Image (cartoon, rainbow over all chains, first blue to last red; front, top):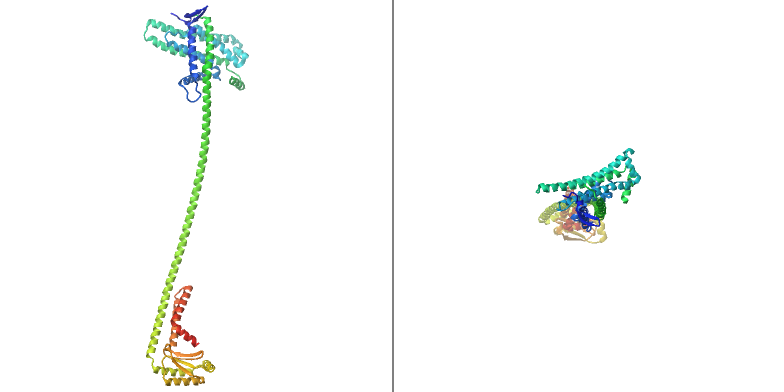
Length: 237
Length: 289
């Protein structure tokens, strides 16, 4: 029994292996991009709006609202990163109901890649927000004694992100696989349904946690004037 | 549990590519479309709000105008009603005055007519009485009476006051004319002679005396020389009686409380009636004077 889609090699050329993980990632990407493109190519700016456009607007505005709830002053700034995390993970997880599909999020390589993206994005947003010096100062807060703990916290939460997603998705797949061999009828369907729910929850958790990390790292603790300047900068973007 | 670092790198690239693609195809178009729609809706709402404010202002203005017009119409109506009332009152008053005047004129006219009727009735009654008296006198006056009249005339002539006698005598001497003696009835020869003699004696002239008859005198005698005349007759008494009767009637009607104008008119009418009825007597009287 294959635990990870990394093990499934679809094509190999001169040492470069096209694993199922990458292939299904491309599938998910293609679905997302083509779906978006199909809708946004005929975007209506008037009052008559197609249902698909309404659906996409609902999704996008919900993500923005969630980002805003976490505490970001300018949701549009984080929307592409956080939104893509959520959409990619959710789509990858939901597609598990398609027979023969192996979720790329069930691969530790994928989740690690996403966690690394978050690991890099947090300081990047923080630096963009308050400069390199400002960002580096966050590691010595509230005292320089906290520096090692801050660093460890950064590394551990990245690891946690990766392992949490991987564990949940992988476990779902594994449990279904085991149940099919034990009780082939009915129970796997229930667990499949449970897996869909778990997948969406994991997507939500992953995206929200990433946003929380980014927000906590880039949250300004300056005065009102500084905040105003920052807002102006944001609008400039 | 294994990590294929090559796959990790590929997934990182994949993820970044996906971020870029979704930003290109999903987030940007959707957010811009939403923003534009929101802006349009906002602008439309603002427009609607503005239109509503304009409409409300217009409504207020129209309401004010309507109220103003209502008030003006009410005022006009009230003034028109007042004018109409005034006009009605005035017309009514005028009509009433006119009616009152007409009624008063009619009453006056009625009273005048009644008075005139009364006057005329009295006058006619008086005249009838006179006529009856005249006729009775005329019927019962015979030659004897004429003779006695002549006698009476003679006595009267003798008893004339000096002034009249002088005037008669002067007239007789002046004219050399005849003295005319008119009597109600034919006189006998003796009576004529007696009379002629009395005239000659009293007036001391030899004037011719002509005799004629005038039934109007009823009974009695009239002597006229030139412009002067002396008369002793029943007609004269009757005339005086008539005059006195007329005066009494006039005084009576005058005392019955008629207004000045009407009284004057009535008096004139009376006189006219009088004149028409008594023309011959008048002439006689004028001659007498």
